[in-house]
Amino acid sequence: MFGERSMKVADVSRIKADCLELDILVSPRSNRSGLEGFDEWRKRLILRVKSPPLDGRANKEVEGFFKEITGCRSVVTAGMTSHQKTVTVYGDPSSIIEAVEKAVQ
Image (cartoon, rainbow, N blue to C red):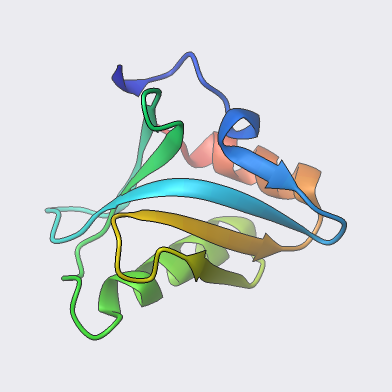
């Protein structure tokens, strides 16, 4: 279900040697920015951003959001023009998972 909390960050991510890949669903032009939970059907973390999906502005906000909550460099690595994206966050995967779990409302 939309926004369900029975999923965990580990369910929507892949651990690599020096990074974590997160599958997210981005909702641009939202009233506020932040994580809203999980979309179990798409198996993605839901992120609302204020920026419009024009000229890469929403993607920049996505990268900045994950850098802010994890303290690590993040890059949108797939889905540049889609609502469904993959974000790679560079750093210790277990620390990143912990930070993202805390940020999910």
